[in-house]
Image (cartoon, rainbow, N blue to C red):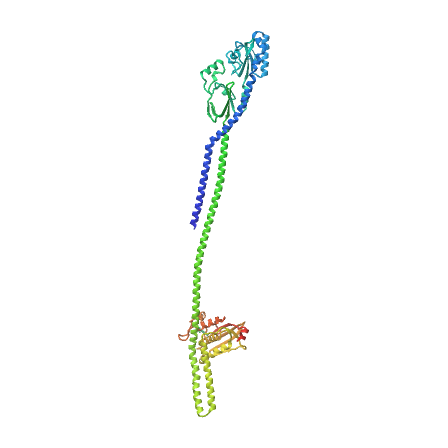
Length: 622
Ligand code: ADP
């Protein structure tokens, strides 16, 4: 039983363990999925960053474009001023020179342009807004600049370059100065781009503008200025040198590595001597100027976000795992408890079955025993009845000697009275003969009485239990034992009560008991010279009590213990059967009474019969 329980419990634990194994595998799988999807997550956030960058890019491009558009028509308008043509015609006129310089300065200030200046047909600057500055344009020749040559040819033009005089990067617009349908000079306007770059630096992203050759000429990062995205072709390099557009020494390629993120975005890794940076790049083209504006948003925050989401995911997975583990362990505990309960129940049921089987066996054996007892009792009763009968016969044997003695005596007397009567009748002494005959008749009566007793004694009792006159029964018993009493020379003292006492019993059987007790008393006092035997009769609280006391030796301890047992006798073989008291005991018990034996203090034995007193109506029925 215990083993079965253990096995079941172990089975439950194994079941729970496989559950936990599955849970752990699921958790590991979930975390692995998270790890695998981390690059995808990073790309997602990079794309988001890129899209935000595109918004910023659009705003920046709009600002740049509006600035470009704002300045575009201005050189042509300014070039229409008549004093410009006049100065071109009279370059040595100091008054005019001063006036034009002042006007140009005023214009530059108002337009917030860095420079406004006038060149003659050789490219020599005649007047400039910077006329007061140390690095004044006045007297400088810009014949190598494309915007000059283009405008001299009669076209408005624009150009981006590093200022050779100022050393500032700027955007140049130029327009021809006309007089009489002839180009007489060129008016140029320059604005610097530092303001844009300052604005760009305030954001988290880096911005740069590249020209058609891929040279970075504007950028929020100073160290990227004049760097190239790819090595320059020989032609391009020659053009730049010729027009002195950028300082050739600084035209070095940027260490940039690009890979596409999607169709609009690129992942960019920029490596410098000091660090490596990661960006998401998007770009847009300004077709009219041939510029490309790039925005590079740092990839760091997107990566952090991806890692944060991954972290939250892992935490959620672990939390769910923990919750599931708790649920599983609870379930396992409940299962185990149920198994233990089931095992205990099985054990109980089995024990109950075993006990029931034991009880059934015990019941069956009890039933058999009861049956055996019952049949033994039945056999005992039959035996007892037979013994009672045997006892009677034994008593009859004892009595027969006395009876024959009793009968022989009157018979002898009858014979002699009859002989005498015959002689007296022969002698005609009739009165005497009559007297003899009367005596014969009395003797015949006596013989009839003795044989009547004998018949009663030998007959099996058919009588029931009724009210019996106790004193009469005692008298009968004494009379039955008359011969024996006489031969012993004994006396039986009977204290007869004043009124008759009625007990419940059978007359003949009670008489048999009394004969037995008195005969035993006679036997016990056999050796005494003056034997005393007394019979007492009384009513104590509706118990009729008959006591037979004698002056014999009394009963030994052993005899007292078994005096009522069948075949217990101390008498010589042939004299006693040891049945008298046993039969008497049963008879009295049958009447609902008791037969007791004890020793008297003064010596001798006392046997007492206690019987229920008969009710008055029982007596009336007699
Ligand atoms: P039996 O008389 O055939 O022996 P009983 O059953 O009548 O059988 O008596 C059994 C025994 O009880 C006797 O043998 C005797 O030893 C003892 N006993 C009976 N009555 C007396 C008595 N009055 N005094 C002493 N012993 C007695």
